[in-house]
Length: 269
Image 1 (cartoon, helix red, strand yellow):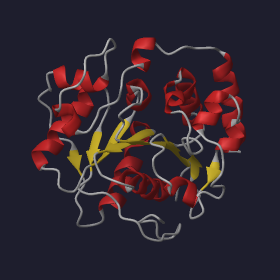
Image 2 (tube, helix red, strand yellow; image 1 turned 90 degrees about the vertical axis):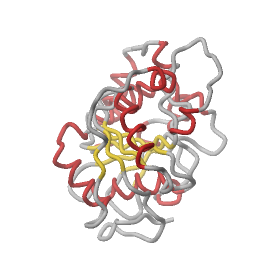
Image 3 (tube, rainbow, N blue to C red; image 1 turned 30 degrees about the vertical axis):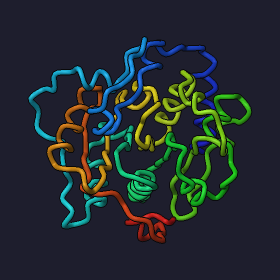
């Protein structure tokens, strides 16, 4: 039923021909703290990482850090449930290496999926994990949807280990510029009308439109375990500046292991 509703909504939204403002589409999302500190080549278009560097960070409390003693991911899931509409759209981004951001996204999504309709949208496209846990690892993804060679019903698949729905970025070798299409924002909006939680796995968000990630969204940050506390606070403040409504900073990423719906604390590799 969610897939049927999404197909209907997507058709209506995409047929309107709404175009997201060009300037916003060319803005990139916040980079890692190291990238923010590095010099960036001049560009004709404003970018979110540039805005972060230039913005005067407001005098706000540091991002909420979930304590680890009672299970960090589990406590974060409870926080998101309590937030209601404030956690309807969740962007998972960070500086953690390898599969860490995707593993954390899936772990959190499986916990939320125990009692709600949840979808994970892979925008990173760099991890094989999403395809590995999908019931259809060869399914088309967002790139094919943007090209018009796949429908919504074809790109939405199921997680092998839970009630979670999955959408991958695209088949191997896809053109990442397709993820900057204004039609992608409309597709995410269609999903938000059907699912109670939509989690965007944004990876390090180096080339994604800022508006896609930040609009009406809450950020979950997966930092490298060696990242200093001061750097974490700066990153959280910068993410607020570029538009996230709230920032939840984890102490460390989830680690790979086997998992099932009854015990989704960690993610199947």
